[in-house]
Length: 620
Image (cartoon, rainbow, N blue to C red; front, top):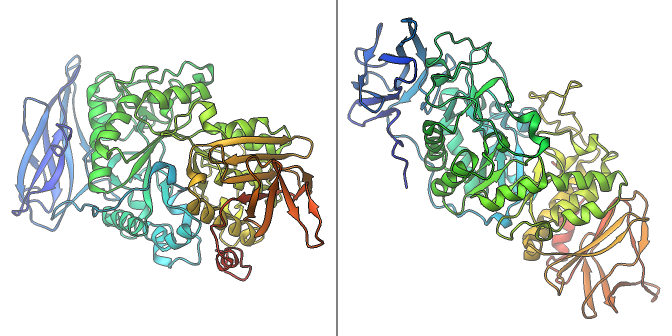
């Protein structure tokens, strides 16, 4: 079902040499909108004072005009009056529905229909995803394997898709690509607080900024051609102070100060209501922007229209919703995040990915996912459990987090799990050094029943810090692709685990069976599959080899160890190894900072194994 507002706003080519311009700008509160004009280049009669729009009773302003050029660059000039003071003012604003925006902040209309991503891609099931989170610029800006013109751009990601697929990745999650094109904020940013144009892909990640929309669609098409789904990080809690609706309704607007939203039809302090005390620092937080106020229906409608643009026109497959607790009204799914999730399911379809950012407590995460149309959430409990295991604080926490069903997650809503993400310092800088200490963490991630997510660079132990000493993020922070010490062995491990996860359905299923914790030796053993296990994993978080008993419940059988391509056998409920000397060993030596992965089915050939672990292969 299409929102009643969808397609009624912004500018679009009519196909007959003309175009329609629509701006929704109703009088609201103490602000009366008196007139709206289009000031444009390339529009017949649009120079100087521009062309006036006609007002409709529902707050829309309309104009049909002839096009004089293939590309029209335009502003809306909105004249308003503050009724209580009689003060009149005129604001020149960009189109909040613009599909493209110039570096000068003017909106861009190109002759021809709005380009749409090609249909036909079948999204992988949520449980089958292996996600790679990346920042479009930082991912390839300094990658010598990428052609110079597209480094740091959408095209650079296209050139590295083969590399990602080789890792086992079948979904990319793009850090925010909403355009800001803000003349006061030059350079690369993460764009979590500065979005001005939520319908337009960011021009800073395009070779030709004016063609950012087309270049983004080319990226989506290239991903889909390789079987890779595309998620975007959707920031729906706040927008820039230079967002058009922040400027129109504040008579004394100054982007250096907080916006006066008292007369806004869609902006204001909504504030999250997660009741956990840990959320308090994030309530009423001024992120340098201004909140969408979901108690005002226009906010919900605007976000729904944004989702239509990205799902229907740009072809994305899902969204990760940033700072979900900031716009979640606790237990009220008719407003805020709950309503946004329902709209995403309706607009993106049942197969779309709808991932909430983690909440301040695990119990609240569960309630959020259980009670809404979100079908996953960033579950940071696994992240903390990995840190505990790596630091020698015991294995019970990790054993618990390896079992989402026991945690309370339903099988159809698996958690998204990670050991690194854009919000936190990298694992190699918080205990995972030397790099080989990351190996058991990676194996735990890739054998987890949830949706594993890799953060760009983790696959070769990128160690450039993500934060300054004051805690602020290093937004301009390209990956160091020349970093080589860990690249070979750690990349081989990531590729091998991606291969195994693709081949074994039980690794993508919901079931984990805890088998044993050897706390003194720091070895955790668990099984994957139903009661008759398909896979047994023995993780060693000690840097030294550990010789331990490995439980192997069920009937006696042959097992195939994947990481070393060796044969084992279970006897009397324990794993045994038959040595070349003819002796049967009932205790297994698990290498330090590594693992054994025993599989009932040998789902690889010797050629597969040699290719996965070949040392002479270019690691990057």
